Image 1 (tube, helix red, strand yellow):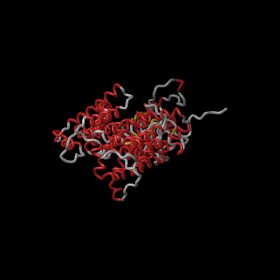
Image 2 (cartoon, rainbow, N blue to C red; image 1 turned 90 degrees about the vertical axis):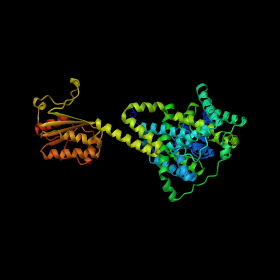
Image 3 (cartoon, rainbow, N blue to C red; image 1 turned 135 degrees about the vertical axis):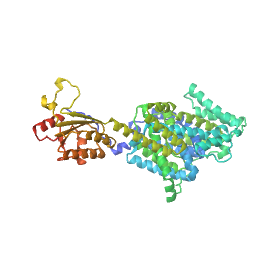
Length: 575
């Protein structure tokens, strides 16, 4: 007779870092699966073509850089990643960060920062730290996403209205709005009309023909209208000279120790935001399909993709929620769909690059206006504002700091506030119950008496025994509360019994506080008994120095009381 183990053995390192592409191919990959992936890949490529150019332009880069990112980075993210359906490329969430890096350090600085971030992401994944990214509080994610949406929309007002600014457009939001307001008399009706038509077409198709590629159709109509009506609007051709018809030769970015140190904070910001954005996208794909991604494998793929993007003159690449969701809805079978999406984009620039030169910048700004509106997560924002004062404070702090200070600062402060909020709630959850003589236990049936001792009248009224039950996580945030409660016991009983059966874990600070109480009790001639502690909690307490003869450990409160009453040696629990 054979038995099936209740738990499966933990996955090996090889299993954890095996790309989903390998998994899909092992399952058997035939013509039907390839057809499904080809259709999905083409669908996503049609969406990604105008979006990649729009994101690149908004990031103060060339439209070609956005396409290179989608081709090179997108291919590697799908080929090496830990998600079946993840589609990578330039992301709207990075617009603010990339634009700031380019403004300060130029395109060469961005390439080096992307290379450094790629190395960091690879290291984070290889060290299996990706699991911890999921602990970023939800209010922080909603806050910085909504803030980025506001900044993206503000950055597109100039193109949406065809304004001519007196000088360079300020990066900070408040001066930017002042500059745009002053330039309002220069409004270009043709550009504003193109932007309005682009947004209207996208919204109409989304409502009435959601399966149609709204972005591409809107951009194509805007380009045709601008060309045939000879509208006075800026296009990709007039500003950037068009798009190259091939990928550039790989080239290592210029590296020096001075530049590395200067770009280190930016590389860290890219790593942090890239990890959060890509794993959020993978989670969305999981929720849509019922599959599970491998987070650390996904981060390694993101890192390798960004290293490659730096060699090919691209932007920062990450998994993108919009393209990944489109991939799933289009019926993708596995990672081949994302790889084909990149190859289709490569074919587009090889064949149709000259046509992209006719695309009006106002049309691409219209696309980003819709993207910003979708990013804002308005319902989530409103819900968090009314959820609790703590969540609202974390949300508003992240939102405000991201808009008016810096994205990295907003995320770091938001995470710190979220941690403080969590610790405050955990500290409030700790409870200390005090009982003299006997412990008041929960109701249970008579036949569930178990190993409890028979009733003794003097047991219930014994003033020489004080029993404390500690319930909840016993950590540094709760240590002061527990210590204060224990110190309030003014009597000097013969024995203290501390019931730790409801303590899931203990840290050093809490153990130190408990040790101080035990030593004080010992000086007063009071013996202290610890009972009911889970094995791992008892081991931690012993490791922290709380052991015999300082304290006695027992199986249960009843055992300790019986031993104290009759002067017996308490039986120590087995390890």
